[in-house]
Image (cartoon, rainbow, N blue to C red; front, side, top):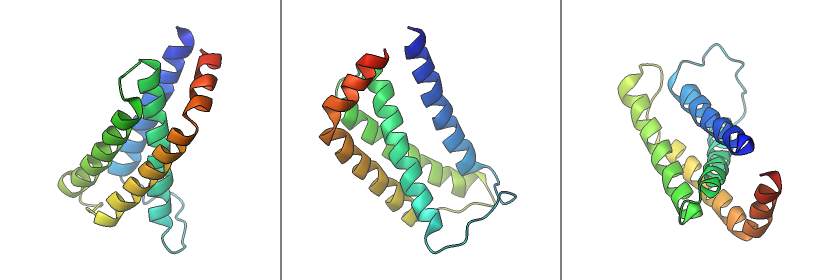
Length: 127
């Protein structure tokens, strides 16, 4: 039970960190300057989100865990983009961010689907 709570807390923490990083002013952070760095960050962050949400859903035996994780991740990313447009003056809605998010989610979903038995085995071993 403690490991289940630890994984859930870590997963929810990642979701909160992703929302915070997406909605608050991060201009004071070190900026990486190479072409498309922002889209690569979106791709990786949302691929990881999909994995994290999948693990949480699998732990709680949510039916269709992978499909639900994909749907949750896409909705979350889209809502964050809309909130950037409506709640902030220093962030803007970007369709290409949503495209990068979705690409990362789908690539991770394919990887999870391919390695589902391995992931489930590791989760069961951890639990």
